Amino acid sequence: MSYSTAQAVELVRRALFETPAIQSMVDDRVYTRHLRDEDASTVKMPLVVTAVRTSPASFSSRWRRREFHIYAYSNSSQDEARQLYALVQERLSYACLHEPHPSAFRVVCTEIDDGMQDWNPQVRAWFVRGVWRVQGGD
Image (cartoon, rainbow, N blue to C red; front, side):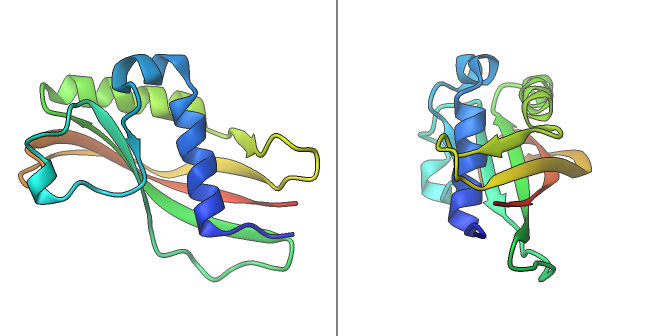
């Protein structure tokens, strides 16, 4: 049994959302797509965005690999964005994520490109972005 990109995105989102230290910083603001320009001025921060990258086509019937950009945004400071991203790293580094039922697929998360830091003028916020690989199967 393989898993879909949507399932992988949801596992990562849920793992971040259910981590108390992350939740205390972002409340429910763990998104699976970027903000639109018109939303940027109204959205509360800090927040996390998981954005699917193009995935390499290396998979078999049992194992699949997906790659994500994970962004930690803050409109107050670069330090807050770094602090939030450090919590993401702590939660996801080599984490085995799975659905709650016994026959569920399992994936392992690996950071493959350490956090790049910059300012996003469209969102008007500082961010740290890393590239993550989620790989697994049943």
